[in-house]
Image (tube, rainbow over all chains, first blue to last red; front, side, top):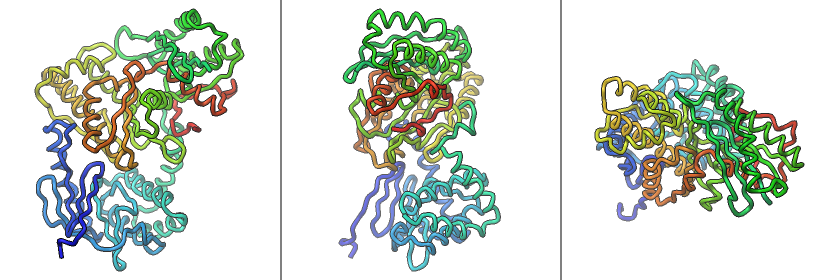
Amino acid sequence: MLGFMKVKRYIGGEAEVIISEVVEKIRKPKRYRIPEIDEELRKKRTRSEVRIMAMARKVGVATPIVLDVEGDKIIMERIEGEAVKNVMDEEVARKIGEAVAKLHRAGIVHGDLTPMNMIYNNGKLYFVDFGLAFHTHDIEAKGVDIHVFFESLKASFENWEKLKDAFIEGYSCYERAKEVLERVKEIEERGRYIDRSKYEVNR
Amino acid sequence: MIALGIEGTAWNLSIGVVDENRVILVEDRPYIPKEGGIHPREASQHHAEVIGELIRSVFSKIPPQKIDLVAFSQGPGLGPCLRIVATAARALSLKLNIPLIGVNHCHAHVEIGRWMCGVSDPVVLYVSGGNSQIISKKGGRYRVFGETLDIGIGNALDKLARYMGLQHPGGPKIEKLAKNGRKYLKLPYVVKGMDFSFSGLVTASQKLYDRGERKEDIAYSFQETAFSMLAEVSERAMAYLEKDDLLLVGGVGANKRLKEMLKIMCEDREGNFYAPPTEFMGDNGAMIAYTGLKLFLKGRETSIDESFVKPDYRIEEVEL
């Protein structure tokens, strides 16, 4: 059976992902960096990713279960299901909002919230990539997290405004949701994508 | 068509003359601080003092009647310096009765790099004294995908050099010292998504100097850390945008170790690395002239009313 399984390979900016009956995420050595920097970085980031995935599960956000960690390699469970990108609707967007609320409440900022990094299976939503996640209680960081998600909705879906509203509905169970969402608006307005100069002098 | 461009956003006052096919001439009158870093007022006084002589010198080689348009760097940059450049450009435009075109300085770096390297849609790493950004085209506009959260890499190199008693500009001196570095001293590596930060790295390096570590080892450790960060965010942008070409522009692009790291990174992901000749990496008038010419051929022109300086002008605001 295994012999027939298709192996897929993705080379991201930081890690290589091999999908077979399990998922292997390898932070390969970067030849451009001296080993003193490279080795420590890869180990540190791998450990941090695993730790944050465990934290996320603890607060009720589904992620793949980590089967093994060897230095710069994480072996995790393969999640079956549809890429959220293909099944996105208001119901799914609301669930994403609820999950992000849980992450933010626990001080987890995902760092790369896009539908590409989520899988939906029988009503259950999984977050599959915590490669850029970090721990903080900073409102700005949480605001940026959501801003990135809204940008990705805009880029991929015609009905992004409805999806955005549904997300906000789900996210609003977070005690500091109002504060974060206000910051998101501010980020949009000042937007590095529009004109930051009005807000930051002397850059 | 022949375009004359004036650059003077910071330390280098430069005039370039180009046509559609080649750079005809570039002349520089750099401001070199006697001590310390660039002082905006002193830099602008320097520019004001030498700009008349620079223009005469250029016109002794190419007669003013041959010039079809004048372009100038409108920003971002040091306000007092920008005003000297804008004033000179307006005067030339009125006197010669030729169109005036305000150019975004960052945009000019990108355009001359693309022109010289013949690369159409790269991810651009732009590294200079005041700027450090990852730029690429998306949706008909240049966008900044990552950038420094505090100071530019050139600025960071200058600060460290000055602290170790070296004169401005610090970059080349740090590069020379780093060649004799043997020991890697641990320094903070700060990358957040596609953004990065250098000020903590400067402070930590200064502490190493206070502790009595060798200058060579500090310079080496600093370069290795800072350039690894830049190579990493460049790679992340290439993966994210699914683009295979990387273009390096800006004055710090002259650094050989930085080029080497980026080249290796591109090789390992089967991408291509491009860098224009060193004399067109730093601030120069040719890049302003070329970008002005390109914009003019698309029908752009800047009226005198719109020719005010923009010290915080961002590349995202440029209509392509």
